[in-house]
Image (cartoon, rainbow, N blue to C red; front, side, top):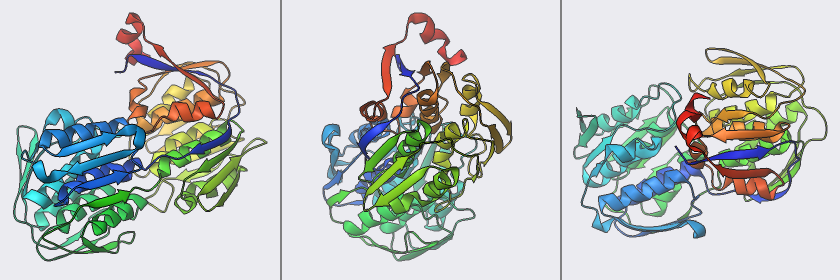
Length: 431
């Protein structure tokens, strides 16, 4: 747990301009994918987040030569020195996307030993579809003392995912990129970061077609060159800032984003009465009056993203009427609503369904960030609330947002870090 808490003095409109950082979900796939290259790669526009720091340490542990400059948003990776093919359990538990090391190491070296992935507790998040794909490509898989050991000379195959899986689509794509022969992946996820990962792989010599559709065709290649690549802007950071602008009845211009990736959120904000306009790589959000309750149902892309369900539900706590939120992706993604009740929010949770009754005001309170996006939702709630909100466990937010506090502060929010006293260190989790 971090030795600080976030202190938010709420009730202020957000105004001004902000630039969107590089995509977390893209970066967490592209950095491991660099292991597939035979030469050095330079990845640009990387967000300065904790999950990238963990990947940096993993690559160093494996023996790769890595030069990371967070302030320049750039990482140079030379996989030529890789000698270890094991990702220790302690590293894999710190982030969900550690599982991409399976596909990258297996595809490049024919072996991977990786601990079961960690990350946010959002309920059951099996990797069975990843393992199904690896087996279809010819890998043998066994469990040794809590570590997954994957081995085999991979050959192209037809892999049909039993369910749409973002991580599984990327992971099997990584492994198949250097397999012998052709692979066809069907019932694939279509998220923008899948397309961006495929674009990076093609940039260094892979032959992948169809990313962004439900069928991806891969012609395996025995060699991939290095190269430079710039990752796309972060879709979820863009959405979080859009929601924060609306939640504070502000007027915010976001630059360096991709408006077409935000169409599902934009449609819902417009339905609520929020003004949203876009042009080229710029999105403007403003709200002058009260906003209406709506119904949200999370879906795979291009539907409403599950990662924006939690920030959006903060906005719904002050909507006129009762909103309905259906979480179709994860079964345990409403923990933040329990914390918002401490701030005066009203909600009823029934499994994957939540009803949120709008209230006139929220009031500041001490709250616990349950996970990455839930923490961002509580920050938004704190910006909306009257008085002081203290957000404990803020390190989970830093896992996926690049300087979110600074960006909000530059827009007029009052957010600061305060050290925990000994009693808070011992009791914060019991708020």
